[in-house]
Image (cartoon, rainbow, N blue to C red; front, side, top):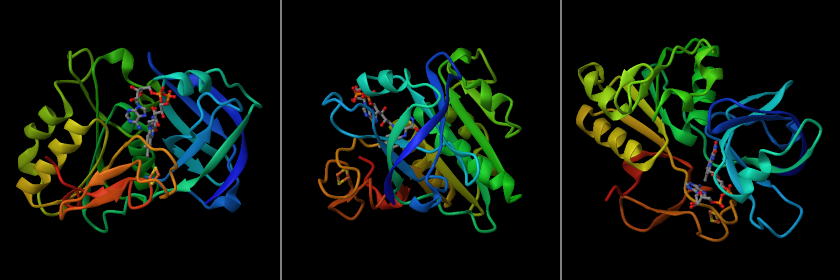
Length: 255
Ligand SMILES: Cc1cc2nc3c(=O)[nH]c(=O)nc-3n(C[C@H](O)[C@H](O)[C@H](O)COP(=O)(O)OP(=O)(O)OC[C@H]3O[C@@H](n4cnc5c(N)ncnc54)[C@H](O)[C@@H]3O)c2cc1C
Ligand code: FES
């Protein structure tokens, strides 16, 4: 992990509310793998003051890194104005990444800002010829990232309004295939909390492992402030930035 200056190589809209930014990565900081995140100091001014955390959506040692991000507040609105050649203050790679399924079937589930890290995991599994199924949920067709439709990762798309793919949430879809999920399956999920909870409960019912990446609001991003604490199953707290953001779902308290 290291702080370095990356250079923006692209920053383009990929759906009605997501953009994808590509940028150079200093390989001496370490090579990110799926589930790793980085933080960005987006402005040289005091607003926004804190670095913002983002998961990587792609990385290769030659072409650099990518992030899919949603415009939410001041920081991401500023990020959307960056163009080719602009410098980026990057700190990474950070956190605990996704473990590989080790001979088991992988079922990947993503929604919202979880789509980027899960797409990176799918791409990595495809590159290693590890079988997986990818399920992506969004509210409506215009929110679905166009790049993913063309990626060859063959996602099952779920939309709340039925405007694209399966009509219903990822939870509805998972219920429809629940009988095919067994101990030989590993679930990987990133997205809104209700989606993560549904995946955890499914893993308990089907007696399989489930890894979730939590997108807790963070302050320092490096384990120093407890600003990202999540409740642990056995009592006490875990820091999402250092002990996570990827956790075995059974490590967490789901109340
Ligand atoms: C490990 C990790 C990985 C992340 N990966 C991605 C990613 O790949 N793509 C992406 O678009 N975003 C990602 N996020 C969320 C991202 O950090 C926030 O969207 C960003 O910090 C918002 O900054 P802002 O200044 O635009 O918004 P702010 O003005 O800070 O906030 C705007 C709104 O967004 C909410 N918000 C801020 N941070 C978070 C958060 N972490 N989770 C949920 N709601 C939040 C605030 O409560 C507020 O309502 C990730 C967060 C974490 C912790
Ligand atoms: S954000 Fe400070 S400890 Fe995790």
